Length: 115
Length: 114
Image 1 (cartoon, rainbow over the protein chains, first blue to last red):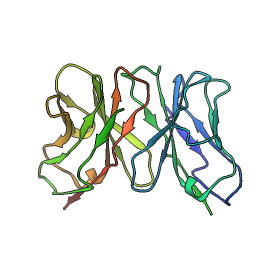
Image 2 (cartoon, each protein chain N blue to C red):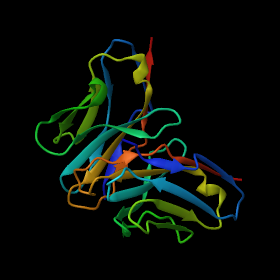
Image 3 (cartoon, chains in turn blue, brown):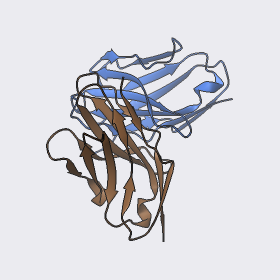
């Protein structure tokens, strides 16, 4: 079946602009995660959804970052007033039920460049 | 707090030789441990995980990893390296008593030399 998909694959924007990054999880997966991967680093947790609700958003760096998952499937990560330091690859993952033993399956990522 | 350390930025191994990619972890409870591989311009692919039970875990593409509680390690191994194994490998940990927040290491670049 189809894996996790993310759009766009690349996004270039100017400092101060607003961006939206989309994630389509594997069908039937109730848990969805966003990570940020900076150059030379491992993925860093941002937020975790169980269904429509954000179960843990402790990884969001500040209030410029926000994510939604209104129907419990597709999720959008929103970044306001982008800064050059936001440049990174944003990864989305999903898992079947969000249990500790579940495997997280990752999408290919969106490479965000803030000029 | 939980953390993962991958002490080697890069590992070079000749094709056909055994390979080891090192990982040590720190958690307050029992660990759930994972290995992922990342190929250029692609997302992370799951290789294997340790939840409980046998300390030797077998995964995809002939990889295996050994959980060592006393040394708090979870090293990734393969008996015979292939050139196609060249990629970036990430170890990750989840505290079984905590949240669904996986912590990743900084990654180890594996270079298999023909």
